[in-house]
Length: 179
Image 1 (cartoon, helix red, strand yellow):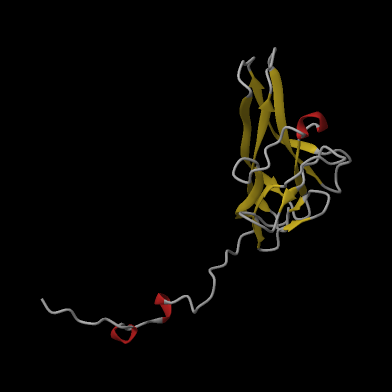
Image 2 (tube, rainbow, N blue to C red):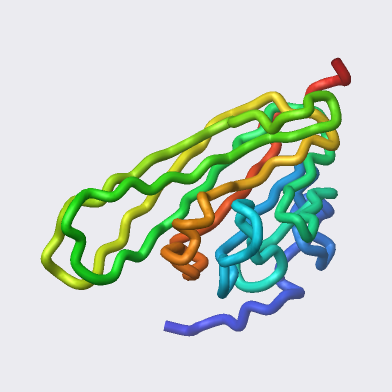
């Protein structure tokens, strides 16, 4: 059997077949943030990694130093977060863990809870246990809304710092006009 060399010149390339050597870029805002090496801070806001590892933001999504994801465009967004807690040592009684995703903006004086999830540990005899809370939902958000994740300060020392276990993000499902 005779093999024929196939080269680039053997193919006819059309405009629709190429990406023009550019990276495919989404037009819709999207962000995915991951755990920092140290979650302990002075507020109950969780601060996330937003540039390294699996973390990224595109299409005008902004993340500020206070831990807020700033929504750039009016629309329906899918918002999600997972927080994994590490428990070490023996537990004599059940313990409750929770995480909340909140929204704030200049129209309301108090933050609004969007999502809240709970996990409860059981008494255990072994030395190590992981518990995760996960929450997700679709919400109508406006440009310049701030969303963020929160865990009570007393639970922050238990948060897993692995980027595949603790993360937070949002992406635009459907844009909407000003309303």
